[in-house]
Image (cartoon, rainbow, N blue to C red):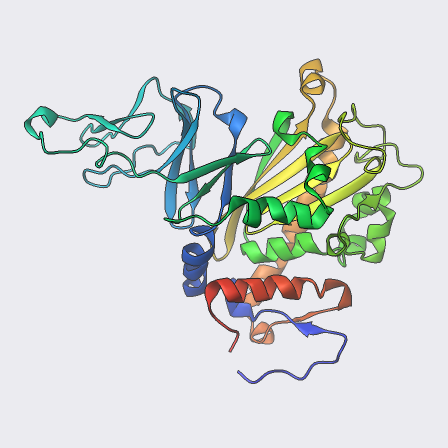
Length: 376
């Protein structure tokens, strides 16, 4: 493809095929989602031994559970006998073990094979070697992250450093004590759009004045298309008459104690590639994690996290939740509006990024580098 001649003020996006081509999506599954740290669950969802969740990471179903010793384990959700899916539910709880419903091969919570019909007649079967296949696990900010790679990349460099780079230091995110907050509300969105469209949307605010009236009322600088994530340490300031990060600007709930005066009345957004968004405000944290299922379909699970006392008190969290729920709906509708056009001849060479969106170009370069491809 011949490079387009563009005015100096704009730069090219990825071609439309990068949002629709199933071969490219397969490359993303193999070279992005299956090689990087991928956030799969809130640790509190696995409250006691035997609690589990099944999640899609790239092309693999992953079974995440809490073991008898209290640690969190993750396995490929595949029986070692004939390949049956161990669990098909999204979540649940077992007492002591996972049993394949096909031939009753049974595994303990550490993944070891502990029983099977006629297993005593097969003394040469190593019960660890023929146990469930382990997946690397880390916990951070109260969430479980897994990596399917044989040798995972540095968690500190690939995950924690994203937050450090955005906020300027690790202490700034530690102030919110996210690991000890509680889920006050969770909403799951089924978005008919490519995961990259969702990332790109989250990274810029050129669209904010057009589709986010409630958000720009609370954060006036967003009405000017200010790309807050482009500036290390910058948090968008609440409007003068705004009392809280709520749908109507009314007072929110109790402020998180560690949040300093320099962070009060400010909103910070962090993108942790490939699939996590962290939103920080003084009294709660909003965390999105994406599960790309197809080139044109992405599940987004969004948690609103508050102080435990606030959740236990039964206080009305509606105004706080409703603000970003509206933002989510508005954003996802915009992404779904773009998705069909990615197949259009009008977008065969892609679109353009205006100056306030130029930082998205770095995301596109990152994608191309991970895939080992180019737009030509």
